[in-house]
Length: 421
Image 1 (cartoon, one colour):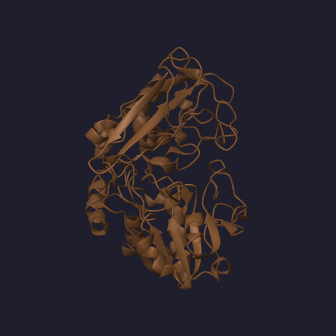
Image 2 (cartoon, helix red, strand yellow):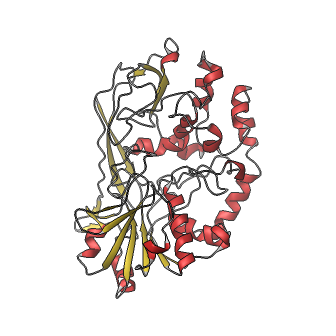
Image 3 (cartoon, helix red, strand yellow):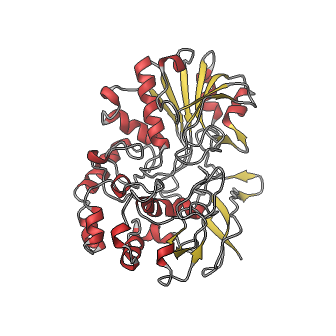
């Protein structure tokens, strides 16, 4: 069956169509669609909301006579056209394209190294920032006067594009180059939650002391990186942010395209701050299906849960998922009402608590040595005591209390860098 979910806002109305299976189905065959429609207030008139990239009148004059590098991926669009193609036609001199995780065209799987190449459509050299190096080299930037950063983020600490932004800012500060950020909305920007990252657990999926859900756009985060002295050697990068027009953090926003291969529905994006924690457990969280981050389970939970699914190898999404070709049993969250996140302003810890309690293999629940597909829970949650809290049966209320005073201190610090209400 198919479920249609409508999301309405005072400034933007969007419709997301998500193909969902029945709650207790025994197999998953059909994948989701990802559709975004802007509605009109009255005939001939559009809502005033516009992304930074759409406001070409504000930034094209600043690019005249300059050699431009662009950090982009498939989310970097103006309407249905990539921002690269769009501004090339307007005479901008783009000399290099830089691609983050998943590559410029977005067809590489999560965590897979991407090589440098030449973009076949434009003939422009494409440099990978998710391969041999994550920071542009002096050679990469030698013929670049200004770097444009235009990538859709999802507002979660362990989503790697914000780390790419940091590396680009550090390289440009080193070489005296300016960074222009074409800002985009944060679909999870309406709340702040999760523990602040302990520097002991700094990794490629968490570089700075921010909570799991940080409620910043990348433009705001760039100001925070500068303002807090978080760039390498405390350098300051010259930045220009082309702000979203008529945007606020409480505004629901459904992305026009999937931001990465495994965030392929509006549901998955809103569940991601919670369900990505399962990357640190011996559970499959939907990789190897068309519903990543919206279902979770394992073969050893048979008899504990009725819902089941079978992960398969899917090129470009997950070639070697955990428990490949094995029937997994667990939770189906595809029909979960994500408006609950707006009501509670909290990630959902009840699911990981429930699955741990139900597991007959508790000693393996957080064991990342059992598979290369399992990471450490500490790198995802960001603190060292969460694993033991779950094992000891500590209540969610007590777990949350342990995140203070860091979480409250972050909320206060964040106010200095807000570009939007």
